[in-house]
Structure formats: structure tokens, C-alpha cells
Length: 222
Image (tube, rainbow, N blue to C red; front, top):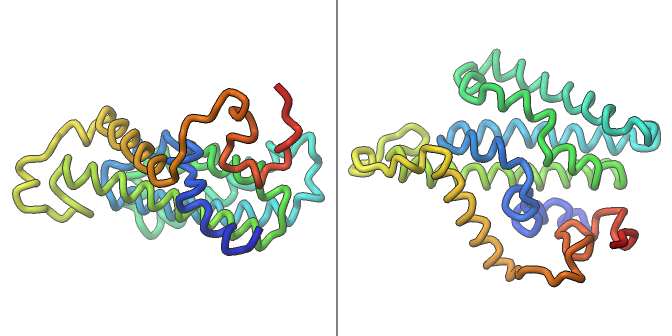
């Protein structure tokens, strides 16, 4: 696969949230305000790029039997760096993200890309994959947060919007509103990509958007 493909596929075709349906917990939790969404997206992107690159560089050294614990230790190190930087230089964002910042360690997007891509590909390709997935994650958070903040609170990045600020749809700031927006965006992306429900005989590896980058493709049996 070309480097451009490695970079761009996470933006839409294999968007980690709207197509692969990973990382839904932080997506729903921090998408009430656009500023928090951007902060979470950038933090996760940094961890994705660094962890993918390091895991790829060490893929021939890390023993296969303990690869997941090793991945978590590496990812936790980068998350700790992000936490310390935000606490020192963006304390309000650090407090707003709360528990969801350290939970980046077990974010399914980061562990998934480490297992599916980084431990099978070269450093540059893995870093580009992390960047692309991070961009896709950040854009999804921003779109969701913009919809929920504008229509729910009548603000955008904390700036009040005339009329909407007094006539917000309060349910959009709550958990049910998050699920509604999330479902609508998934439906929209499926429509854009022309995806349909896979037949029963294609519901395994062949039906996965990441089948072409997964080393297990073709080895699965029913």
C-alpha cells in the first residue's frame, strides 16, 4: 500500500469511530464541547503516532507472548507525557478531559492499530497510519461536538451564537443526544461509502474494512 493510502484511509474509508466503531466511550463523553473534542483528538493523535512508530521499530524484539502488555506499557508512557504537558500548560483542558485522558492507554483505536498494523509494517508506514487514524478520530470528534454544542448549548468553542444560545436542544448535551448524533453520522458515512449489510458468507474477515492490512485475512475459518 502507498504511503498516501496509509495516511488517508483513516480519515473516511476506515474511520476508526464511524466505520471501525472503536473508541466510542471517549467519543461520546467529550463531544459535548468542540474545544474538548479537539484536545482529546490531538492527544490521541500524538499517542497514536508515537506508539505506532515505536512498536513498529521494536516489532522484531518484543516476544509474541507478551506483546500486548508491552504495547500497553509503551502507550502508557506516551499518555503520561501528554498528561504532564496538558497539566502544566493547558490545565483547564486537562481538568475538562478528566478520567478520559489517562484512559487513552486502553483506547481500542490505539491498541487496535498497534496489533493490526504497527507490528506488521515499517516505522514510516506505521507513523503515517497513526497520523491518519488520529486525523479521522479528531475530525469525527470535532463534527460531533460542533453539532452537539451548537444545537444543544447555542455556543461554538464557547462563543455564544445569537438565538441558538437561548433556544438550545438540551437533549443533545446529554448521553441520549450523543447516541443520536453518533448514529446519524454512522448512517451518513455508510451512505457516502455505499456500504450495505454484508451477506452471511462475507461477515468474517472479508467483510472487514481493515482486511487488506490484517495479517489474519484469509486464515479465518468459520
